[in-house]
Length: 219
Image (cartoon, rainbow, N blue to C red; front, top):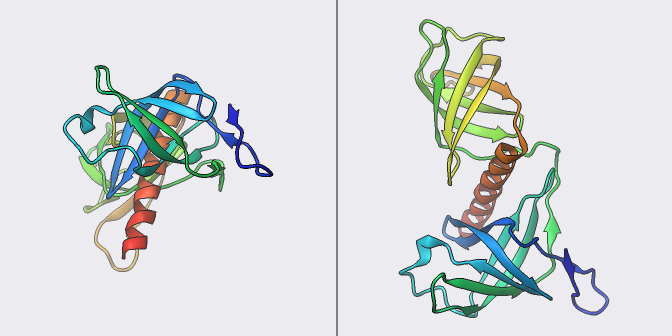
């Protein structure tokens, strides 16, 4: 879906009604919502539950939203123009600039810091690791102890992706010593995903990347 933009500029792409979107409010706050209506260049979204008692979200505030169609991510800067006072609460936003796609590679990688719980029928395997990055096709995690896992072993991994837990079943691609003299090892796990899981991973990575860019600008 697209809406007219400034004269001479390309139309701005808008999300479809019912699409899941993330509202990127800064300071690491990325809240999940859903598009309720689109009228011209006006978008109505469900107010995230986390903002029920937060008075700072008033008309005039600008932030980015993003959504993740297959194999791409669309980022749209928006301005909040209205907040409904009745339940269920709704936010009305309009584009504050042109939308853009982020298609740097087929499987975008990102994210770091989440605990990865590992399960496999291998004696001496670690119980958990720390996520280094993840994509739709695999993840890399750091484990602080030597593992008996090896290439080809089947492993189940559970990791929190910001809004929900992802349960992933895959195959060990590689286990190698952690670089730079760090203790432990890096484990690379490959897996396949359905579209729902792939979208969850894309949304998690996008929220993480936007948070990183904002932190870098403040540094």
